[in-house]
Image (cartoon, rainbow, N blue to C red; front, side, top):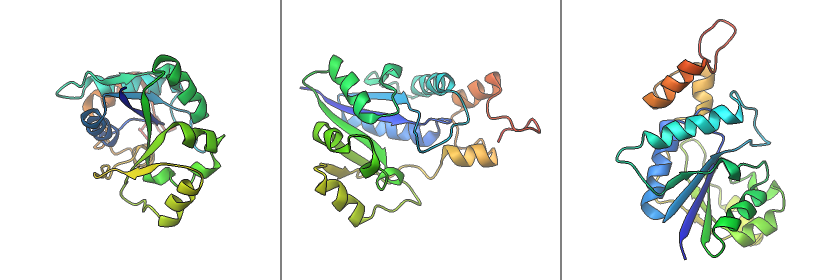
Length: 194
């Protein structure tokens, strides 16, 4: 039985923070399945197809290469339980851990069919700078039947939102920045990246 990390992300655009998380997960799990997701609680600056393509570029730019990180766009769904059911078709008897950032912990109890989801996966929460993990939020997840662990490492202090709002290219890996430039993504009305 394999240990599989499920990591869906808005990837709008993917940052060095996403790359760091994937590298950590690849060291701890047999497989890491990753996809760009349309989070119903967020608006997106690039299409789902572009975000999937940027994740592909991001994964391929990881050095040294990690052969156990697999881009799986077919897992993308607005409902995480549907993602898990889709993954289960290919990995029937494997053990799934859903990886989320600490910014999502308080949202999870409102997710579609949360009791079913928590019955099918463990949760791994990656601490993000600026998003404290509240004991009350963890207690609520556990009351719903969640098996929750906190990663013993922290995400980088970067975010896709900061890139979109300020246009600072520093948190974006060079290969992803090249894709963004070639596709003219995240352009404001003045023609500058936003």
